[in-house]
Amino acid sequence: LDSGEYFLSERQRKARKLEEKQQESMKRSIEKRMDKEKDFEAPTSKSSPKVSTSSKSQSESTNLDIDKLKEKFSAAGNKRKTSSSGNTNDMSDFVDTGKGKKKKKKRTKE
Image 1 (cartoon, helix red, strand yellow):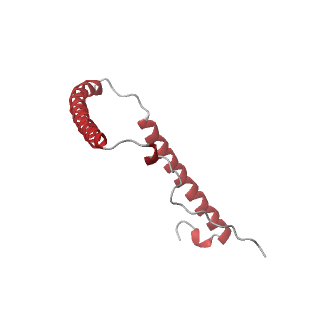
Image 2 (image 1 turned 60 degrees about the horizontal axis):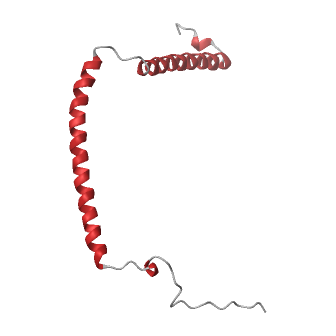
Image 3 (image 1 turned 180 degrees about the vertical axis):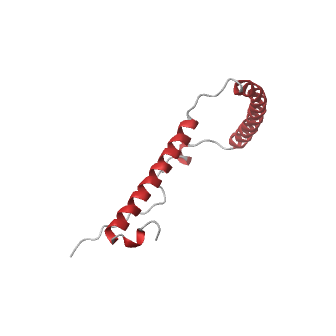
């Protein structure tokens, strides 16, 4: 009763609610915009030494990963070479020669 809402007409109450919603949405949009701007700020000079130390450990782990991959692919290549040496590569393995297939007869409409 102190705010006088009780005596407002229905139209005025709806207008007041709509105005409050718009204000809230403006506040939220400003907050979101500020958060997005924080993501685009340039990093400070203090964070650059951290990157250099982590890049060293990253390069070591990358080297280990590359070595593991090299071993994996060389082992796979060796398996392929041994399995393919026993087989002769005929084109019939890759191309359909059509042998053994029957032709379908076309039905005529009556």
